[in-house]
Length: 114
Length: 116
Image (cartoon, rainbow over all chains, first blue to last red):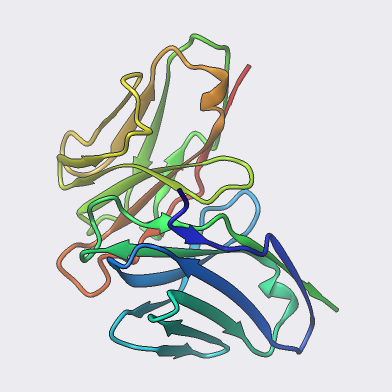
């Protein structure tokens, strides 16, 4: 049973436009959420995170929104750049992390078209 | 020390052989994690250490798998009697507990295991 779901395996966006990546979760104990970016043959790289006490966190071109009632979060990238082409993983942790580590979704492959 | 280091990057082995991977975490990080990633999936948690103590193991970690972190620094993951289903990317990550960033894991580049 997947506790973190990324229902779009891939997403194609034109350069300069907004990219919106979505993530849903089922475990109501999750209290911290992260987005990781992964290039081929490399490990995931931390991008941005949000605690369950917030509904928005911004870092430059990246904004993460959290809707706890819907158990849904999204990552907005604006404007999208060619270097943003990668696989993006949504991850979640419960009870302050540690036990069971992070639970990851299957990822969304973002392709930025020139 | 600029990040998490994993060795080897690639390992090809025959079914039934034993393999061992090494991970060197970021030096000041006291937590170390092992994950496995197969094609089309996200990383799956295997086990984690806080200092030298192994505190959590996933049900994915069968008795053929063993992980150690003898001095609370580097860690090794051994797979005995490898099977074709063990073919995957094995990722190591580290973090610093007791801080607001403890869930922020820093990953290595992984070891790609192919079992023939």
